[in-house]
Length: 293
Image 1 (cartoon, rainbow, N blue to C red):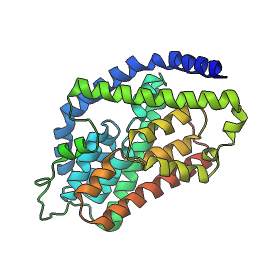
Image 2 (cartoon, rainbow, N blue to C red):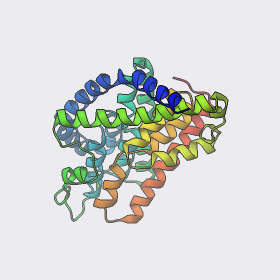
Image 3 (cartoon, rainbow, N blue to C red):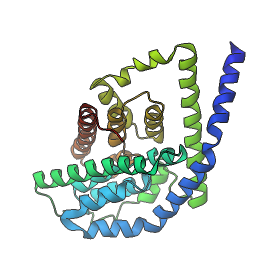
Image 4 (cartoon, one colour):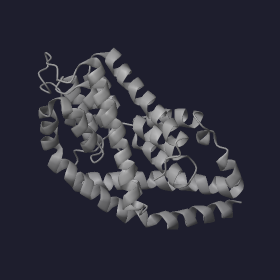
């Protein structure tokens, strides 16, 4: 039995090792874009007025945790509205994009998934601002980000987005690869000893309940949650709707930073409920409509 396990681990390692260079190159490019565009995108969102959720939803799909953390700081300083923050959180792809690229998923499929997340984020953000009548930014005693050191908070929450492009890309690549290796080993073990039919009956693949649980997993402020959810979808274990529920609810370290920099706990809890509720509802609708990518 031990020999079988060792052989399975070795086989999984060989199968996943080719993902590492793709992950590194993807993260290197993403880090470069994020570092080059971060200040420009922040300024663009600040100046976009009532259309800020539109811009936030579009931009949110590209950066990693750095921008969701920065958006939390902008909201705490009342530079952006709650709708804009929600649009960024919902559209943020976290680790989904590099995993899809490293797995060599078709460009059309990736664009559809990113477009779906961005679309849900934009519509939700615009609707929230319209309903609350807060299309314009609100001034506060903080006057923007004057007292909010987002870089320090990002480092404190282990975001690693300020370690330099090469080091950050290498760190993210190794971290995500180890998660993928671990998940693949577990899945291969279950398939080998239990069978594929047992996986089909997993609670995460049950209608409504699956989306609700995936959304809870997505709320975990760690890249592991998005890695697990994306990998389970690629392995055919969870539905598209369940994956979207988890990834929509996931905002990287954005939520952690929000709770640290925004003193209004009631607002923070409300935003968390919005994230979870919209994510779960969207996942249920996607599966009910039979949407495919």
